[in-house]
Image 1 (cartoon, helix red, strand yellow):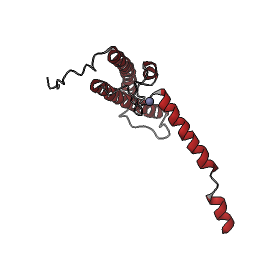
Image 2: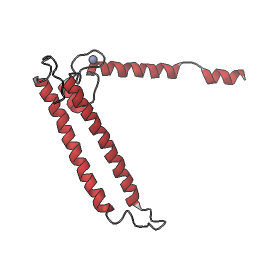
Image 3: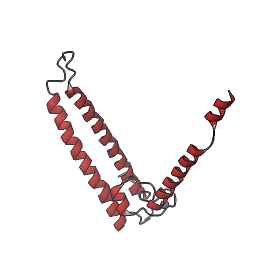
Image 4: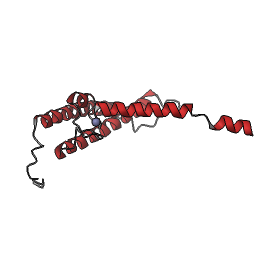
Length: 151
Ligand SMILES: [Zn+2]
């Protein structure tokens, strides 16, 4: 055991901890089984086919399909990494709290968005601010028209 025994913070095995871990592990299991079934498909289709010389003009849909599958698997693998990170943060007691206001992010929200880093209020405030910014930057009188007239 290399795990450091920290002085009982008691953050660990609360009901919320269990619930969040459950959400993450469910998601993890789901993705692992998806990846496994994809991998099986690729292996079966690829068997014997992939090393054979391919006739020109027959770079077929299969190749494209393989690329798509590969991209999908890669995406899933990245998601898995994020889940592992989230699980680590959960162990540290830093998962599931809002980045902005440090409030707990609701379990409902985390269930839908396991990697949410802000609570609903902060996220909405942030989106509203971003929208306002876009709006003003579009309306700002400016640049090109003025330059065109003076040239
Ligand atoms: Zn917040």
